[in-house]
Image (cartoon, rainbow, N blue to C red; front, side):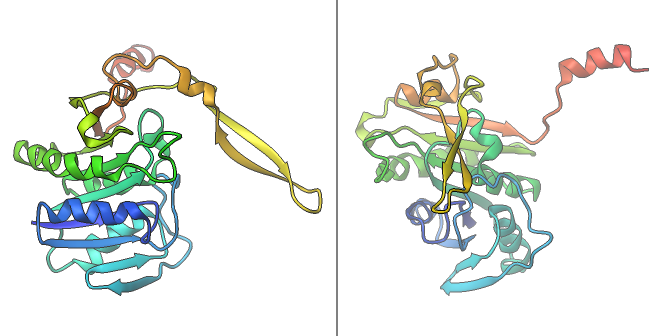
Length: 255
């Protein structure tokens, strides 16, 4: 089995070493193609107006001056074009990708691009707490990641579906289990704009997150609830975002 690994934190991020180690517990044919620079939050952006630069930094290790989407395309359609990968692993992200995160996440986008290309694809993310922010508990992802991927692959990943896996911010022996979840939702006030001034007094801005969002009571059966209870969350996400229920109503008025 040939595995293509990518991420959005960059080719030198600790999480890319973790995803490679997870991949090597499944296969010895592992390739890493990841962004040269941090691409967190770029979502599914594609480089169309700027050229991409490709740099080989080691055996089967490549850095792309581009997005996670670019990396999966370059990896599967250019670097591995003679024998395409059988599976795409994106991560392990430093921080969880749940609820609305899946819209913004470059980690999710890397896996989504693999799915678009017809490859079974997984996004893996390691949650951190205030105490573990500077040093996420990667051992949790290392322990549970390989087994989850193997089990899902035995079952078979449906076409147009990506598997989003999130590991809780606790030690491996504190994990209570693995649950299949649905995408959660935070309140609408979790985003904020932080205005600051540079040395010349000119304004500049950071997009941030309100702590109050973390105080929400997550919905039962959601990815947010699972992590809050120290469970590994596995959420199948579909490419087709059509609202079928509302489509039926629209057909009654748009004729």
